[in-house]
Amino acid sequence: MNQTTAPRPAPKRRGFAFQIVAAIAVGLALGLLARATGAHPGDKSHPLAMALGLVGSSFITLLRATVAPLVFAAIVASVARLGELNNAARLAAQTFLWFAITALIAVSIGIILGLTLQPGLHSGAVASEAAQPHTVGSWLDFIKGLIPVNMLGLAASTKVDGASASTTVDFNILQVVVIALAVGSAALHSGEAGQRFLGWTSDLLVVLRKLLGWVIRLAPIGTAALIGNAVVQYGWDTLSRLGLFAGALYLGLALVVGVVYPGLLALHGLSPRRFYAKAWPAMQLAFVSRSSAAALPLAEVAAEELGVPRAYASFAVPIASTTKMDGCAAVYPAVAAIFIAQFYGITLAPLQYGLIVAVSVLGSAATAGVTGAVVMLTLTLSTLGLPLEGVGLLLAIDPILDMGRTAVNVTGQILIPTIVARREGLLDEARYNGDHVEDALIA
Image (tube, rainbow, N blue to C red; front, side):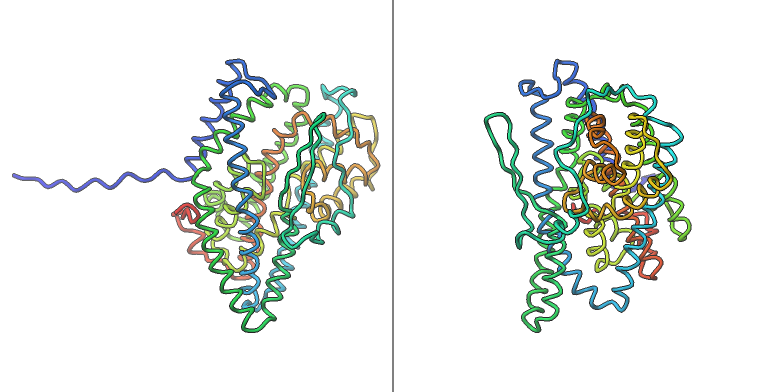
């Protein structure tokens, strides 16, 4: 009796998230191997350490090169689409309201942990390590950040190292957002010529997404190199002197991502498991790259895969990437400010804790033109009247802390558009609850 055998199904392609997890493991192994074979921080002669640094930095450079034009095209196109929505103004207001609500919760967690764990009283840091940072935040940076210095949003910085100097040019992503909003609005009021321009921009966006997809395909390789380079440059031994501070910060970040965000999703009738399954690739890339801008494309795709309409997602996610930073602008400055006050034996008054909250809720927008946790911390310290030299105590482990902070930032940047879309009845629930996660950028 002949039996027919059903053909075996084709093996399932490993998902992007799996590839990133595997790359992190490979990166850790390569970093430890480099350390075991004599590599040390700043080593410019060890072959493996040099290769890890070169590949990792090249990947981030490629991402950043594609992000600015993508953000410009996406926001210009989204302005036209938002004009078709009856509740565009309400969507924008709801978005910024929820930015503030989650920032308030996050900074409160940071304050509670700082007061409970008292990391500044049990630190291995020494006063000789204190030093003022080169960049200090101020409230005037908000105005400076909003006003484009040129139509391309380009910013140049020069670094002097001994007798040599090097100048780098980068995009100020907030200024790109402002320029795109202005251009999109002007196009809407330019009649037939404006409509042709908007159509061309939509086509450009399709091309840029495909181009960026090719870069994203390199993410597993870039991830392995970035993680390996982090192990070589910083290692885990640098955490020993400030272990309690690092633990307090990561505990706060874990509470935000593991308790606050799932709680908000559940309150809105959304499955946290579904959310994190689709946000996970962007979170991982944010962790290893330490850049919200680098993870922006994946964050926008994740929001769309969660059912957020593209017209709203392409507007809200880029805006969030410059102003929504629960890790850098809420948990971190709260824990760090309390750490520095305790280290110097300064007692904070209730009003000063209120100032920490106010700076965290408002300050991320005020420093968006020069984004960075160090800038945010200096803004907090100067507002409280605490010594800026305290920042130097924390700089040794800042890159390790920045991984967790950025991952939380990007998670919040995906969460808020999802919640707002749900509250406004715009969320595609069938897509949100779907099991399949479409790798839209790398398809």
